[in-house]
Length: 444
Ligand code: HEM
Image (cartoon, rainbow, N blue to C red; front, side, top):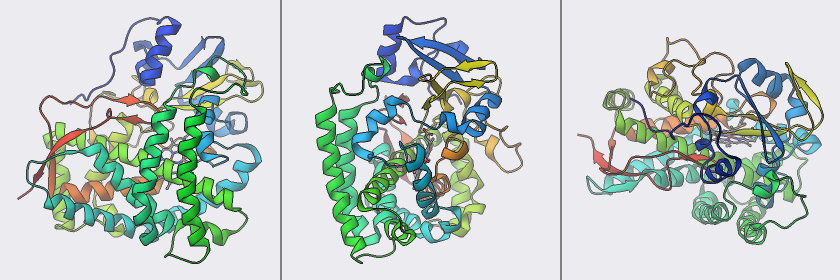
């Protein structure tokens, strides 16, 4: 089965057309050649952009050459700075070095057994909610999974009771922020100086202040000893972070951990809705292993089909489809000499669909991730990035997606709604458009 992707043109687009398409969805800018080239070295309005598609070059930049490639692109920093401040996702240098272990520690794989019960609990609540809906009801799978992931990360960050109250408020404020910021910051691309006000500056700061106020209130209560165990309390035990640091990292974790996982899950439902064989395999596995309950930590190794569908969804539709860095000092990369200011890009969207790196790259084949299949070659499967800046929540996100999918797929089926086929759109993250209507059916 070949799920949808933007049409690919031949040759080069004029720069303004490229920008126009990029502003709508930056996965629509690639031509056919981009999915076969090892490197794309180009200039857009004077700014050099080098796209690395070759595993050895990717590793040379993001792993061995990390120090020169650590800084996020100006577009990413400008889009998120009003919200995250010096939060891990966009910081670099000493701040990043100091904070990374503090944040990494709290979602480390060794803590997953402690963190998973929240996911199981939320999955059980969701199954209960879906069971109360009429058979055949149409729901928005993207919004459902957005609320699901927000509940999980909110209760994990702030503790069960406080998190439950806060999830809705924080999500609403995030949606407002995203609507204001969009994805392309043309002023940065055009190389104009940082002090010029950006058109979205004031509204974005207003929306950011609303999120920060909610989070500040929650952190105050947690640090005063209120609430159950939470990531904020765990970070506080580590010491060495002030109130503003807690707030920035809490918002970073909420942002980084919520929409990514939600998009991945929405794609899983869409793909299963299109592929009856994979859908039957996931449902059979769930019924056999879970027998109608939600999945827990110990079930994960027994759910290879759910995991394979999640991984194949992450390959076909990586929630973060573009990793862009600003080169900080002149650096050699293989044969390439990159000057300071060059934007170096690794695009999981391109790498995951590269003709030389994957067999039938545009096809949905979860079997490639089942036990016994050869593992993907090094540096060809990058949904969580790579190197020292790899996603700190990769195990958390993966476990959450497997738990949500397997817990619900044994009891329910989501069917496509005639007349609607999802289409990938990449803004800050890659989503199946603005909504994903699907019909809910209860299994016998
Ligand atoms: C399917 C789910 C997820 C995907 C696909 C994903 C993907 C990514 C990617 C690609 C990056 C690197 C971005 C870049 O280098 O430009 C990243 C960074 C990050 N992610 Fe995730 N993520 C997911 C879930 C989570 C979760 C659940 C959390 C937290 C609980 C999280 C926390 C973070 C943080 C803190 C960073 C910044 C790390 C740093 O810059 O040092 N992510 N994520």
